[in-house]
Length: 170
Image (cartoon, rainbow, N blue to C red; front, side):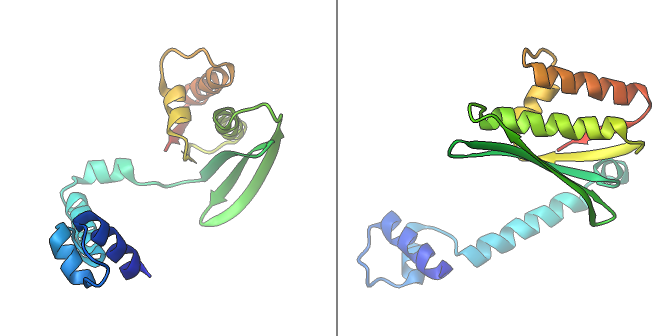
């Protein structure tokens, strides 16, 4: 299946006839085969991790409870969800239905704010929150924000830090 996909892309790049083989099309189009590209990515990742000093490795280590958030919209249905994980086991899941006029961005911010509220109510020293919304994470880390839920979430983060605890956003 991947060979067929890769072959069709290579044929379009080099504008060859359909009877040209995969390997010939890859050579003519100057594309690397997917297996070699994958090995290259693995090698580059391993090299980048090898060169990190122990302090950086400790800082980047993801330990403690995790909360995963997501917001989505399908047609006129908008929702947000979060799931908590401890020691590799799901310890809680929450789903929220939002008004149909809400955007996906609002759903993502809502989910992040709910996750931060859960951390604030809890007693954990450090909690990792994962979101697939880069714009929402940027909104939370931006020093000036006019978005009320993002502002409230930032205030909650400041309260958590004032208690000597921590939240890491990914």
